[in-house]
Image 1 (cartoon, rainbow, N blue to C red):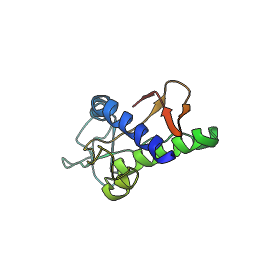
Image 2: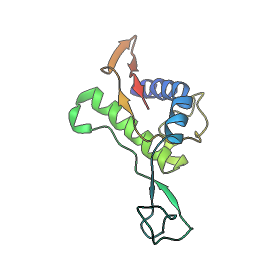
Image 3: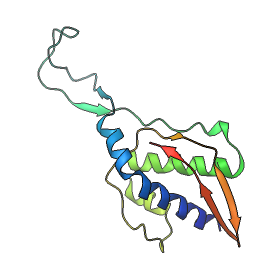
Length: 136
């Protein structure tokens, strides 16, 4: 029963998150690898032209603020974000039921997710449905 809830939840995130997450990553600030030099600017006058840009780690939701079913959903969100960030397709696909229509690994990454409303978990005829409004 909880697997159905997870599948519905991931389906909602995947269907609703494509454009906003792509835009968030494109506008996300970049960090530079400290071992590489940055181009000449007023702040770094003694640097070389080669630079390797590296994104920062994603900002996970604080699990200690939740309990019960809400905590399980937050853990799922954090795992999904982690596997996307690490490009870990096998672990990401393990989160999804094999009969799910979501049979692909997304090409985008999620830097941060913010809950817009409280998590709502409903049971309808032995099927659980979780509704989570996020901005990511």
